[in-house]
Amino acid sequence: NAGVMQNPRHLVRRRGQEARLRCSPMKGHSHVYWYRQLPEEGLKFMVYLQKENIIDESGMPKERFSAEFPKEGPSILRIQQVVRGDSAAYFCASSPRKAGDINSPLHFGNGTRLTVT
Amino acid sequence: KQEVTQIPAALSVPEGENLVLNCSFTDSAIYNLQWFRQDPGKGLTSLLLIQSSQREQTSGRLNASLDKSSGRSTLYIAASQPGDSATYLCAVPSSNTGKLIFGQGTTLQVKP
Image (cartoon, rainbow over all chains, first blue to last red; front, side, top):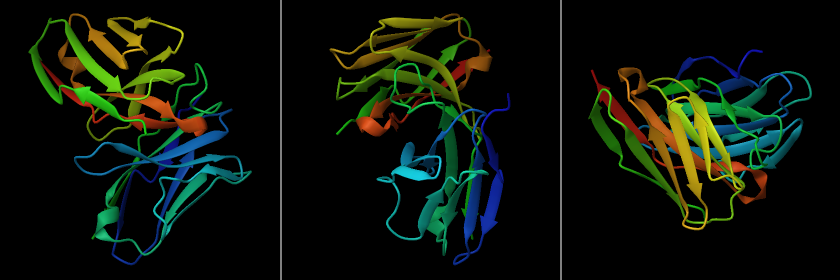
C-alpha cells in the first residue's frame, strides 16, 4: 500500500507564474489535508477536502490559492501569480476518516518544496 | 483558540541517554494527540497517536503519555541513538473538522 504521494518534489517558479501541486492520498483515504511549512516556522493548516468537497478552507489565503479533490484523480493545490513569500514546503496528508476522530492518524507525503524566484 | 507549545525547542544529548520531550495545549477538549517525526527535507512520519481515553501509548523505545486535564503530553525516548536525530512535533485536532494544530517542534540531536 503506497503512502501519500506528492509531486513534484521540487518546483521552481518565477514571480507571476502558476504553481500546481499534486497529492494522491493513500488507497482508501477520502480525506485530504494541505499544510504549509514556511522557513523557520511550524506547520500551518491550509485546507481540508473530502472527495469533491471543500470542508474547511479557513487556513487558505483569500486570494490566489485554491484547492480541489475531484472524484477521480489527485488533489490539486493551485497557486496563481506566485510571489516570493509563497516559497515554502507544502505537505499533503490523508486519512480514512476525519483526522479529529478517535484513532484516525494522519499520514503525510514528503512534500513539495516551492521556490519562487 | 487551541495553541500548542513544545519545549525545549532544541535538545542535544549523548547517545544512550533517556530523554523527555514536552508538549502542552490550551484546550483540553481533544479527541486524540499525535506525535510525529520529521527528518530534514522530508515529510512527517506518525510515531504515536494517543486517544483521549488513553493515558499512554508505547511503540518500541518510544512512550507517549497524555494528561488531558493539565493539557500536557510527553514523549519519552529510551536509550537514544544517533538515528533518533530529527524534529519531533506534537499535534492536536482543532474544531470539528479535524485540522491539526502543530507545535513548533523540538529538534533533537543525539551525538555518537
